[in-house]
Length: 160
Ligand SMILES: [Zn+2]
Image 1: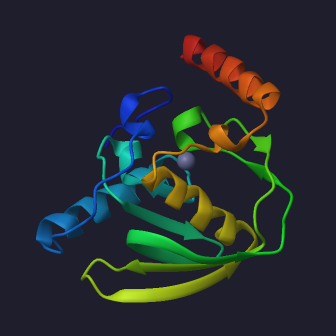
Image 2 (image 1 turned 30 degrees about the horizontal axis):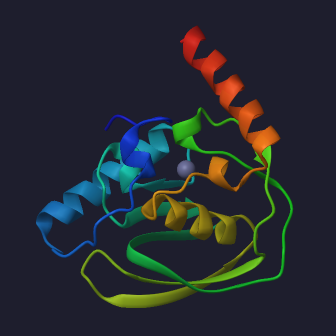
Image 3 (image 1 turned 135 degrees about the horizontal axis):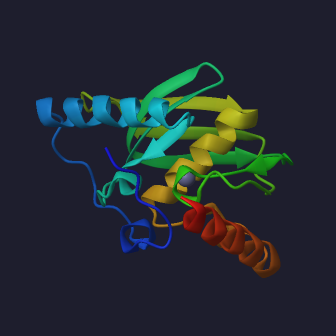
């Protein structure tokens, strides 16, 4: 699948709920994993492949899962560190996030589950759930940092 990039409209839209847990969803999830691994990413949300849906896949520090209709149940503590996004040319910027995050979502068969994570996997829960809400990590940066990342991304795009 092709990865949609900033500033495409679909990345700014809150996704619709996943309602059908069928073979089509299984194929979509398999394609999303393949696309994520090919791009050497640790998470990928449906809007990043042009679909306005509340759905993401991730494989980050031993946390491999499919999350449909994700919700953040709790977010505690604070972690520093850098964050980047496949839709913004993997340009990284420092962004503070919660250190421990509890996620609730449905798996590919529609079963609800809860999962807690720390560190990078917790950051991934937040980043990918943001995508489902039409938010990019850019939206959480200070205006100065946001402009820096946007400028660097525009340069990267021109070189390709
Ligand atoms: Zn992203």
